[in-house]
Amino acid sequence: MARLQILELPEGSGDDRPPFVLVIDQYEGVEVPPGAAQESRLLRYQGMAEQIGARAVLIFDDTINIPANEITLSDATDGNVIRIRVEPDLDGFTETVMTEVAKAQAEVIAARQQGGLR
Image (tube, rainbow, N blue to C red):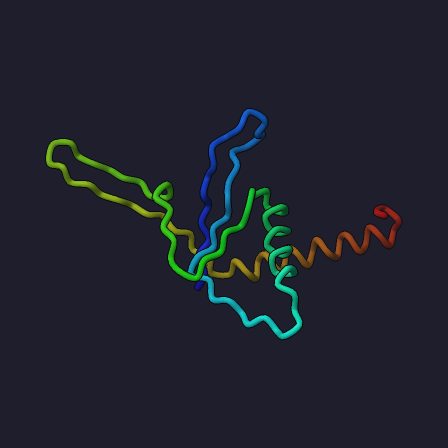
């Protein structure tokens, strides 16, 4: 199952909030049907980045560990190091997102029908 991680980027002077990159690893790609443009897949990922406010979406087949997402605890007296990695439980995430997307689409359609959007 694919994992989602956040890679925080250094803040710039004009940033309202810390910039970040969404990293998806352990991704099991789907076969692209013949005739389907690779550009449409790239545009979909770029659209995803824009919707969530990410600078980019990076997708990998392999496991990518981002050291910034680990907490290192060390005890100077004995030299032992403990690393803790926090990973989200994303069970049901896809269904929740799809439900919210469907609600948002229905609201846009209703607003258009009422003349609220052009």
